[in-house]
Length: 300
Ligand code: G3H
Ligand code: ZN
Image 1 (cartoon, rainbow, N blue to C red):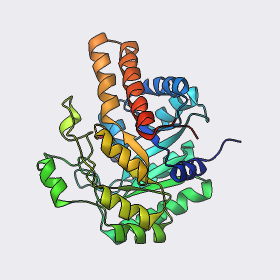
Image 2: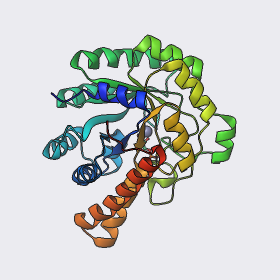
Image 3: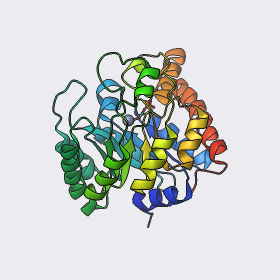
Image 4: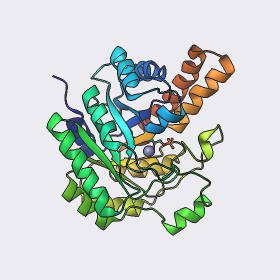
């Protein structure tokens, strides 16, 4: 029987081995990702979020699950439901319970509830509810505390200003409390990382290069003792990624960079095969960089 994703992530956390999580913005990306994982002997998560479905070509949680099932190999990957927001970027309430339920029924191995736009207590309550829905099925839950910006409408203030102010950063004290009372498996934190999906990089501009506050990370890791997740994984400088893995980040979500590679290939070559080929190069590049950074394979 294949190991559960909970066990795999625990082992990765202990060993400081990174589990990359690749966002599926278009269905044909699934096969290419499996091809590259196989060729590089890498374990990863394939994940899909509401923006992938609503703004790009992932179609639905069901469509991604079906495509995943066509190429599935438990020695290489698991399927994760990324970002189910409680409140969306326009401030509207989302039918989060139905979306989580949908992923559970479809057989997703883990889910993410994103209550980061809620006050602390409400985020706790919603996350507790998702944990109580998912755990009896053996499904892991990721939650977010603090706010990884870049998913909201309109332009953001200049990045350096944001970083210096620590706006949206996860409080280590709150993180400790949150993990204790929710029983959540993995926690997405904000330490300077930023999403590229919706803001600047929504078209094909290059995403702003984020920095990370490693001291905050250390303090959060010390207090939480569970796998931490770095969202906005596209375009973070190597040195920061390296320090992040050393200090408690187990999962890095990568969306914009691989989506833009796929879209570039589609535009230039005009077909899915050309899109897949540019995506493949990008995935090799990323995985090679992660190998180099941690000095070992991403294999458990
Ligand atoms: O949940 C998705 C990730 O946070 C993706 O962020 O598009 O900046 O790589 P990114
Ligand atoms: Zn994210």
